[in-house]
Amino acid sequence: MLTAVNKNQLRFLMLCMIWGSTWMGTKAGIEAVPPLLFAGTRFTAAGILLLLYARAKGETASVKVQDGFRFAAVSILMITLCYGPLFWGMQYIDSGTAAVLEMSLTPIALLVFALLLNEERLDGRRILAIALGVSGLVVLFWPASAHVSPRAADAFPGASLWGGLAVASAAFTYGYGSVLARPLLRTYPALFVSGMTTLVGGIVLLTAAVAFEPGAASALSGDWGTVAWLGWFFLVIFGSLIGYTTFLRLLRDIGASRAGSYAFVSPVIAVVLGAAFFAERVTTADVVGIVIMLSGAYLAMSGATKTEATALES
Image 1 (cartoon, one colour):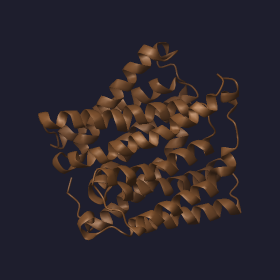
Image 2: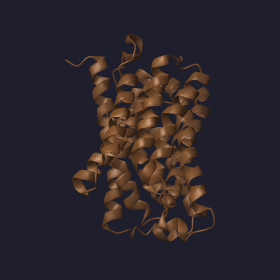
Image 3: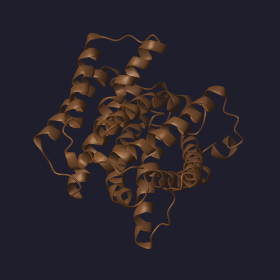
Image 4: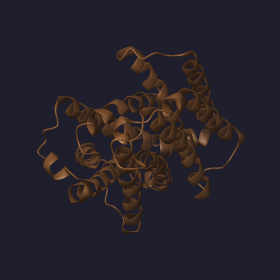
């Protein structure tokens, strides 16, 4: 029988595997579909499916009036203001740049907001874990970050700069929303919280896309091509239904900073998948960066206290 600690370790590994492969689905989608529309349809569909699944499992609940604002804030921060800028910015910067910005800033943002909102306490282990993880990311992706996206060169002046700022902002909105979500997860089932926040955030994204994004209304016809649709289905099923719910359960059980250390393992998965399926070259520097990042993730996850590791069964 799995203990709470082992269960969370398995969840963490599964999350890393899933979110390490979602970059491919995202890139496949935004190359053919307006990014806000792609994100909005993905999260709206995922939210509906999650709530239907929660209802089938008997894990729905009535949102208390006093929690309504927090639900709305978490939805906007973790979905709308995270994935909207992230998908938009990825059009104009290289994948390596996006990885350095988003993955390195996410654990830092999670820890900062957790400390500010008194959800966690600062200790040397967490500081060292984040320092190792960020250092490994820089070693792994810094050479790629020097490249300029061809799409940015043909877009508006400063496109790569604005794209980078958009991707960086996603880490902080996600971090703030994640910490705000933890009190909800003590009261409501994780599956229900996943469905509500994903649906609300997705609807706001979809509405903004149709109202303001060039080409979004016409793209609602669904004429995206096979590759984009495959990416969309992968993101809905694995990225949202499984990955997002898993992250929220980890957030509830072990805290924001430790759950956020997936950002040091997911890039490793991305590199391995690139080498296995796209014959991408793995250099000595890549191996060094991978070892450093995995060390940071191990340090973060191995520091869970007995209290933090006690899971609520759901």
